[in-house]
Structure formats: C-alpha cells, structure tokens
Length: 383
Image 1 (tube, rainbow, N blue to C red):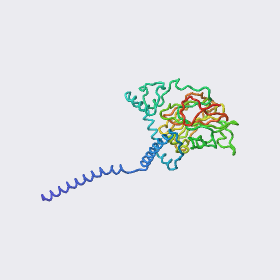
Image 2: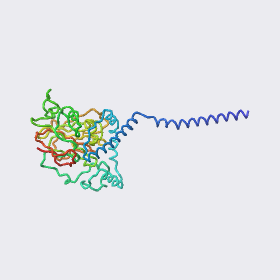
Image 3: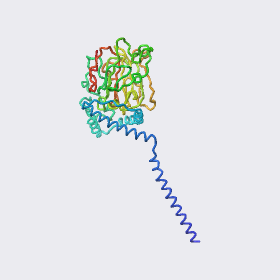
Image 4: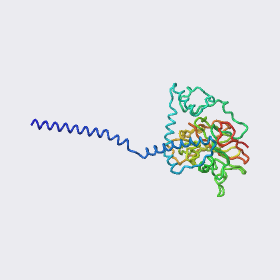
C-alpha cells in the first residue's frame, strides 16, 4: 500500500514536471516563431530601403564623375525599379522625421548637433539673422532660420529673380508639352500641372481640337512658355520667395509620393516631379500665365505657403493619385493674392525643388548656366 502511494506520488510529480517543461517550451518557442515570421510589409521595407541605399551610392559616384566634367549617360529606371522605390514608406518616415525635428533639444546638446549638420552640408551661419546656435530650440527652427536682410539683396534690374537658394538643374523653352527636369529626362506638362483650370479663375485661351495643353496656357500672341528648375540641397536656405510681381489666383495640391529629388534621382526616374507631392500656385504676371510649384521630397513632407492656412501637406487623410484645388479668387477678391518680387512666399522643412513655368515674349533671355549655384534674389532672366 505504501509502495502504491509512493508510485502515485512519483507519477504526479513527473506529470507536473512534464507539464512545466512543456509549458516552458511553449513559452520560449512561440515568440521565436513569431519573430521570424516574414510579412510582406517587412520584405518591402527591407528590399526597398536596401535598394534606395544602393541608389544613393550610385548617385554619389555619378556626382564625382560630374565634378570631373565627364558627361553622364541617361539611364532611366524601369517600371519595377520605380515601383520598388515607391514601396519604401517615405511618407510615414517623413512624418516621423517632421515630429523628431520639433522635439526641443537640451541647451547643452544644441551646439554639437547643429555643428555636425553645418559641417556635413556646408551651412554658412554668418548669413543667419541669429548666429548663436543655442537660440534654436529644435531642428525645425534651425532649418527655417531667417537670414540677415543684407545677405540676399533682391535684383531690381531683371524681371524674374531666383525664388530660393539652390542649384539650377534645367531651364529654357517648353517644347512639345514636355519639360526637362534634368538634361535628357522629361516630364509631361499636363501631368505636372494637372488638368486645365476653369477660365473663371484664369483667363486661359479657349480649348480647341488644334490647341495643345501648352498652347492653352499661352494667353498672348507671340509669347512662349518657359521653365526653370531649382534644386535646394539640405544645407541651403529653406525659405522661398516671390520670383516676380504677380497675382496668385489658384492653388492645386497633389499628395503624391515623397521620393528624393536630388539630381542623381532626377536623372534616373522619368516624370519624378509628377510622382511626388507638390503644391502648384498659378496666376498671372504682366506677360500672362505664371506658376510656381514647390515639390516635396523624402523628409520634406512639410510645404508651407504663408498666405494659405488651409494647406496641409503629407497628411495621411489624402490619397495618392488625387489632387485638391483652392481658388483665391472670390466675390470679395477678384484679383487673388498679389505678390511683390522678393516677398516671403513659403518654406520647406528641408531641401527640395522649385519649378517655375511661365509665359513671356520671345525675346525673354535666361542669365543662367545649367548646374550653377544660385541664391535667392539673383537674376534668372529678363526681357
């Protein structure tokens, strides 16, 4: 009887031990199995991010060849490469970067953080209205720093000035409804600006079967359509200004993607600017149609237009492939928003791109060279 009781006790203890071991095995193996379970999102992020890094390295090599004066061949991305790049969650990353920029830095950390940025991107702090790095509470304030009034004198002799600091990627006449983002790589004028705006907002030429989209934008006989593309690097002054005296009558916002717009990527992806989020301001100047487009990019989801409080860029509530319009012309304001040459117009969160498309007489001349550095206030062209 005692042996039977002892055997039963041993069996109970063994069963408890077996249960404990089995339970521990489950406890340890379940999370491991979950940790190594691959999901499509993880694969897309890993492959897309890795490929984006590879492209960055390729861009660096191309820049080195360009500095040596070697002409670079045009090699456009295939559809699958563009789709792979788009798989990277750049909009989400840009929103996260925007929030990080607004985090207030401890006073002791500001100088080393900003000094690293200044050294990396070659920022000239002697031009800043406030040179003391401790003054800027967060990265966002530092990016949007104001300049001393005398740092950027506005040219009065020429009709169109540079709206920002940056690098001239391309300029010239618009031909065959195609605009060059860099030499040899074009995008569609209509895809970039979107469908023709109602003639109630702008006095476009009436559409007819013989008129192309480009011809509809030209309002005066004998005029031509011109364009200029300015790339703002991370180290550049991030605000942009009015390039001439004009009236803004309409705003069109395209949510789009947020791919990089540096010259290497612009040379690689056709219609890059049409893929990306952008804010198109259209109106007229003394020679007819005039437009300024602020193009977003990776970590530049935030595009601000000072007189447009209803504009909210890189919002999760907008879907790619759509656009929304807003008219500044109303019963109380028949002319829109008047802008003076050199007046503050807006700002980027980091570097990006400005595209000007405007109408002017045939004797309009650009005073530029492709690839040159330019600063806000310097001449772009004149009659």
